[in-house]
Image (cartoon, rainbow, N blue to C red; front, side, top):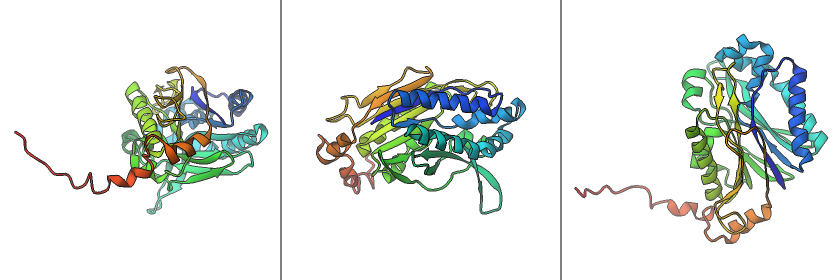
Length: 296
């Protein structure tokens, strides 16, 4: 299959038609290039807040709910494009409202995966960054899921989630892990990229990182974004020696393409030079408890 992963800039949208035109152009470009799976980044949906005016887009709280109010329309657009082009699309994640046990309504950070059949699956972010938890008050959402698709079994680890090996391990049966991200500095981009590559190593699978790139001065939340698209595998037979299947230029908007044969995933899991996925449980009892010795 061919995978297209986005380095996606956010725009001020004068009206809904502008969003439709933008999304249609991006999907058409990737589909024309032969992509079967298209991956958009974390919080790429925040540009929908500009439809409510720049004052709303600039307000952290109001922008969350402005996007949540538009998410159903955006989902309908993605479903239409997935069916029209015969592709699978991970839509850019955005806030969706959820009701907490105390009766308070708060946003979760939700990605949605669309199949050409019209079916949609959702994946919420599990672990909040400090900004999300302490400033933006975005809350963790529903559980991790695996999606059986015509392309293979797919899981989603949204940005920070990719930095936690136990979350990755929970999705160890995925052939492909999608990692939509937004990071404001090279350090953040590096953390997520390292996490994505580590999950590819541990799970002996393909991971796909997408990024928001560029400036969005109208938003306090996504005002500056640093990143690139990347597609990674385990550094083992059937994959590049460094595990990098494709990597975009830092901060350059556009699609990054990589061709992946999931037979290589099955082969490396069955008979790789190492068997990290199989040998995960070999850690048990060797790393815990730890003996502390004094050598001073």
